[in-house]
Length: 433
Image (cartoon, rainbow, N blue to C red):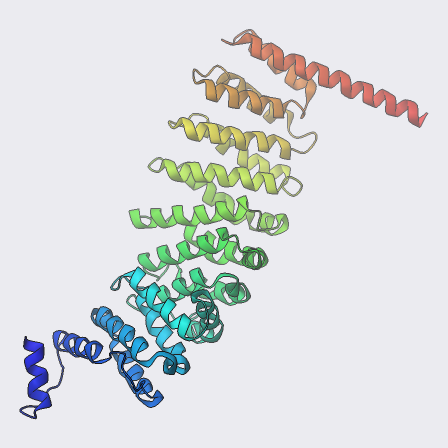
């Protein structure tokens, strides 16, 4: 009623009206949406351009976005094909609405679809073309200057990349320095770091072939510039969540084999302290678990690259997790230990090998069947390192074990493998003779 009376007064010249408050500005957009009804003749392009400029001003204010959306929806119906030339500006506003929480996402998507029909395109094509034409402007200076907390650019960037499909691939290289700057632990806000790590995880796990290949090319930079800084321990619950998010990204990168072994080995000296710290995180079983998974993937990838000295740093952390209070973590560390033995170079330290075997044979008596099975699989992996040493340790463990039959089986396995190896050596000598 108040809006109707105000319109009547302004129309009859009784009084002037300037919308100053948020509520009055909302009324203006409500009236505009009501006036923009499909009726011949169609709105001329000059009027569409004027209306778009007016709507763009309102779209800069979060509290007005739902009312601006209503006006945009009416404009598309009233202007129809005359809106084609202004579609990038209209899509800019819709993208702003889609990236925030003020407007209903389904309503915005429906409006984007209406705009796409007017432009004889699909919604995905609008995203792709918009990304190609506007991303440079969006990222300008973002590798140096930190975006303000309430700046919409972060959310707009995420919405664009999540919906642009393969078009994002050609821009991945330019995104790395921007993501590194906007997630910098020294001065970036917690919400910004969380949001952008979520975007990084999306890009790492998206199955689009061209995006996957682009991420593979930039994986070393993502690892060193974005993930490692955010996985480094810092005090506070918020930092703990960010650390977990960074390690989840790192595990996805390794699980999909996006980073080459040479680059991973180069980053190993920076990565290992992070993993050690996470494996010892008494307050976060999730961090301990993801660290086990990362270490297992790292060892799998570095089998031919990792050195004996690096393995000396790894094994104590793995053995400690066999005593973890969480059985799921103990199962996970068994997989990492099995991979550890596949990485061992020939003639690695016999004394350390003996120590590890003794520890493993002790855990072979674990009351948890799943742990027993995991340890048994680890010992099967270990037997190939040194048959004689393994046989001796298995024999010693048989006398003390609650499951002597398993120890005997492992001892016989080592004995048979040693005999087979000796036969092969004899055959080779005969051939040479």
